[in-house]
Length: 188
Image (cartoon, rainbow, N blue to C red; front, side, top):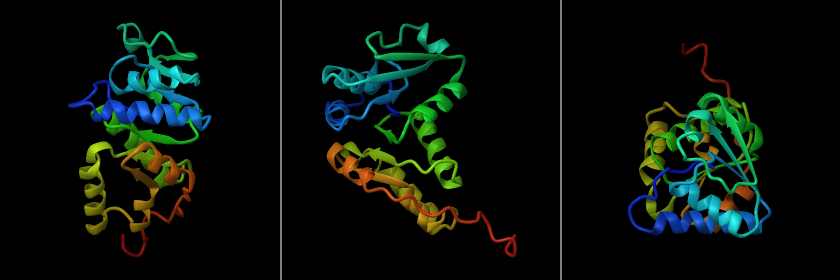
């Protein structure tokens, strides 16, 4: 799970995170996330824990020492740096979801999306598009497809849902697109 360290404007993002956390627990999914106690990260972790679910936090040492570490988690893995954190989260996760967030959320999600595009993994990817938060990103991907920088079949790398139930349903039915050859040598 990738999520903002802020709650965002209004209550809709926190409510979406909490609802997703409850739904994950009811479906017997564990949460692997960045280990923070603040923002949407903390909101989803708290919701999973309140339902009796398992939460694994993976946090780099420099953030754990800044009192950002959630102290009530099922398990905590402290890594030496961000690169190791992302690799560990990817290793432990069977799927990836991005809640609304900022630059860190975008960067982490784009990395696992790129890995899917390259065929490094075949795990489902999801965007919780609460209150249309990810509409600009979906439009950017479409623009990249129209501009022939992204292959049309790669639009199916990501499941987009406006609410937790819709997103989990789409991710449950996920079929990864084929991993095509990167470029035509005759065109290069």
